[in-house]
Image (cartoon, rainbow, N blue to C red; front, top):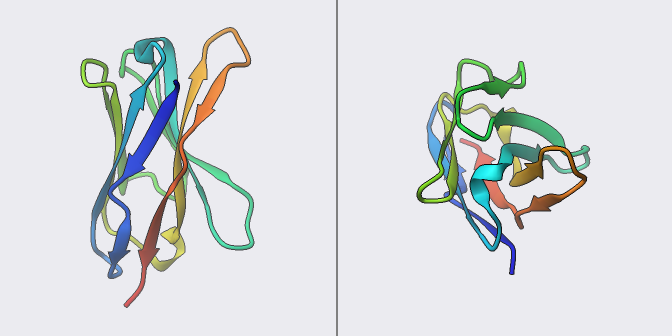
Length: 118
């Protein structure tokens, strides 16, 4: 069955780094645009970053631009989010999402908690 499994979350001090990974299975990974979203307590889920199917084009929310880097490995069916210079306001549950081009098909992972605190 379709699975997106995030890992790499945890507790980190402000200014620190974390690398999130999302492992995909059960669907044709390279057909899908991959995105990261996050949801902080009491807030709506928001888009963080995205990468096209071939990895050639990447986009970032203004709040993370210059600090976060998204990448994908189509052979290993993974998408990663390198997060540097983390801030308290980056605290959230982070989700990966797969979107099919030209259809309504989307898949979500279960999320991984990132907590930035001193």
